[in-house]
Each structure stands twice: as structure tokens, then as C-alpha cells.
Image 1 (cartoon, rainbow, N blue to C red):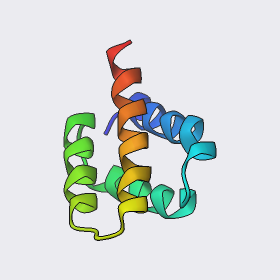
Image 2: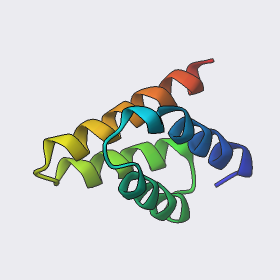
Image 3: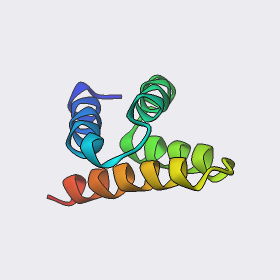
Length: 76
């Protein structure tokens, strides 16, 4: 993945961290997916797929807040 894209993803996480319950877990997921994704679109799909299998609604919500912010920043 390009460094610009990785920075955008990390900045998005940083901006929503005050609003999520499990920021460290989300950060670990994001860093793992950054290594496994060649583009932002693939990254988003991988994160969505990973969180969809989780039963914990709070963790799903944390990830959705992050993904919404990331998508908002991509549109700019």
C-alpha cells in the first residue's frame, strides 16, 4: 500500500479514537490489515469482512465509526 494511503488510514483512526471504546484493538486490526492490503479499497473490504464475523456489537460499532471517517476523508 502507498504510504499516503497508510497515513490517511492512520489519521482517520487518530481522529475517531476519542469516540471508540476499544481503540487499541482497532489499531491492532488496522495495522494487521495495512500489511495485508495493496489498496485502500481492499483494506476497507478486509476490515469489513473481519468485523462482520465478530459477535460483539461494540467492536463492530467501533470499526464502523472508523470506516465512516475513512470514507469521508477519501471523498475529500
